[in-house]
Image (cartoon, rainbow, N blue to C red; front, side):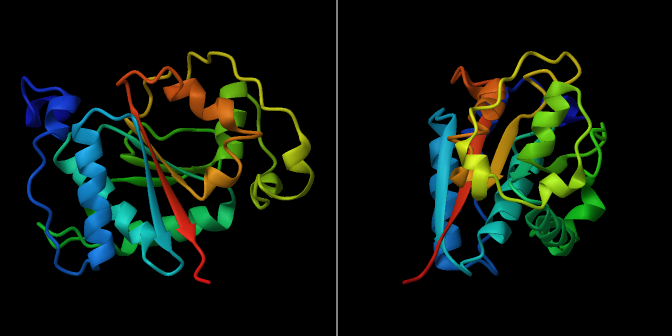
Length: 219
């Protein structure tokens, strides 16, 4: 379907020709964040970071640019990666309540969103929400105790562990996701879980994009 919608073009080319952002309902900081993100993507930069103050609406911002990546850039699948389950539940609710600007319909009326509770990736979902812990278990071909998803990788003894070893898994190839959005995983991905992300995008090639959102506490 995406090939029919965007004949003769590549993902990289489509990222350079995104339509004007509909700014109604967006705060100035959110507009700036999306504009700068899309400018970075158009320049072929494989990684980007969005920083917003606590309560600044970073998940809503993410819903906006994920919608644009799917609708206008033809992204086939976006992974939304969190470091604990309650963030995954919050993210799912944000997508369920997000109304798309052009159609004025709920995002989940147009695109399937999966909050993963098992290691089964739904092939029809445009957005897959999961903890980084579960993604690692999927790569290892192992089942995960759901209780392990309730603790952030930034907490306690997890920080003392060695980086998780990752080997190629043909059931979850490196091209599975066009984009990976990490929400607050910045606190743990550079220690225990770094290789989980590098499995997909560690080469720096334009096979996909990693987009991070980080929340800054107001002093």
